[in-house]
Figure 1 (cartoon, rainbow, N blue to C red):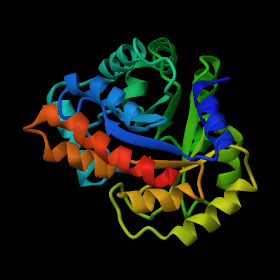
Figure 2: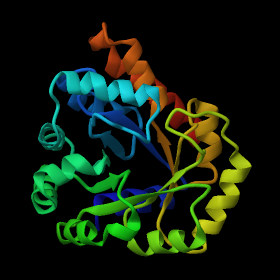
Figure 3: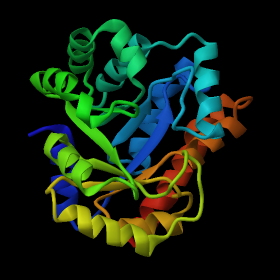
Figure 4: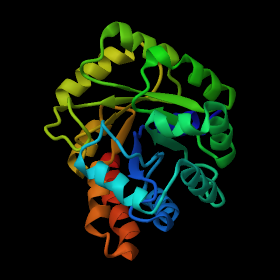
Length: 267
């Protein structure tokens, strides 16, 4: 059983939702990331989404765009991100790690080369934001051959036909984008999210994790009551941005936010 499947299975058995933080690898500097990953797990993270820095993160709002810029300023490459995961695995063989990013860096090193290196490093899943499901069969086959889950985004505007196609292709979990807009958007409507998740659940047995608009313990708790996973990104990256000049405070500050969310979700 994959780490992702095992994590969701264990959480479901205990009646809990997964808490899935997102941070950009190498932000604000490469030496920060691995320690931050361990600190987030200690604070209650169940799965980590690790962003691959990219020069044109078109699906992201200003907060994560700036995180990519900070990381790229230090020359962080996809291969460096894989090295970070490998270092994380030296102490943690349990927590699933999902790489989230854009197709260009993967294409640059080749699908097969990427998949092999990702598997060897200890990556569990890959979410490629700008890869249409209709054009993803080739990379899905390669990732699957290396036992890597392929995770897809779905949104309030995803058509039923495309949704069924994604449900057929996806593994690991589905990432439901709760809002129309880029990362960092606001105005989360829990009732609308619940209705959409109910529709999707009729088409797949995959766990459904919700991201966008979750920025505090209250919203994390509300989504945790209706979804299998709660994805938190922009609020954590914003905290990192606030502490760029105080890097030693980043892990504890981000972990504090995660711990508060975990406590609210488990209440």
